[in-house]
Image: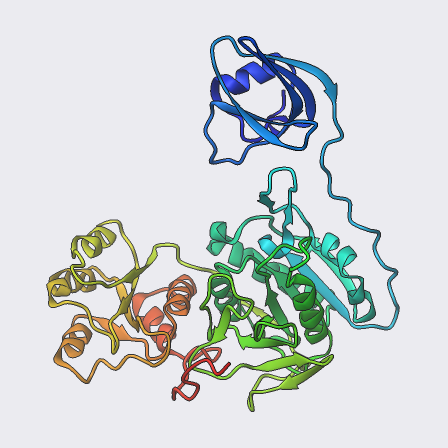
Length: 443
């Protein structure tokens, strides 16, 4: 049978079910010694063991049956398989701004399988539009799927593809672009797009959610309404990230793409602007600008610079850090290392030799801080000066995640290490803030 008919089943148990011509959703009779069970065969999660099958009985209870030598499976009927059917799309209203929604996956583009309780990256942006019909009153929505992956699987190839697709949508006349994305690595992707597509004429807005759109407590609808409003009407033309400002649905905050970090694992206000001011807020159906300086909408032609060097590492220093890690990266041909050092940007002196060796091998190195707020200053103590003497560049108030992306981008879009170093230290899209004026979360 095709693989999708028995998701989660492996090994001898899968062979047994395949031989019995049974698939998930079929009504089966299980005989095990003197015992007999009947119910609907359920799927299993990918990480489950390979020696239990799961059925849902008529009572509504799920039971697991272990594989034994005399286990027999018989198909006795077909049940209606669980299926998500979104409501029809609302009609398109002429004369409204055009907003393109690009789906890359994640919780906001996922749904719950209420048979297994698992969350699947299965919903397209079209499904989201059908669930949030209010969007049709805000803009003419064009929605398509670019990727359908969880954010842990996003890499620089995806960033290159996002930049290319955004550029296509802008050239096709979009008045704003929304990218749905999983929250766990959305900060990396947002930083990447600030660099990969520049000279924007319209907003490009990343959005995610902490709960899938088909759950009553989901934040996806509120987030989508706000970001589509901003994509259609906001006065700025930058890459930003839009999510809840607090625990309620009162306001959505827009963070500058190169200065945003996920700071909470599950709260609606998970994302915070770090070492800068948020750009704007959506409240009571209106966009309120917060930042005094921003790139306005304008008649410009976007520029693509979407190459990223893959052999760059982000390394977090800790007590007892083994220098062999740096040596291993150097020997493996890595072209860049970003250190997340202590407060002002330090690591142990036991790493000096390995760092010096990496410098001689032409590895580009930069220093960020383990602290969320503030900046490195490698001139205060001798340890910092020793590191700069060995080729480690202080990266001021860059977030470690942004520093990684910036180094990958700098190496990917230049020809020499010296050119990459100059580009790394250049403030291209506001990733560097000359002063740390926004010290902490206020709400």
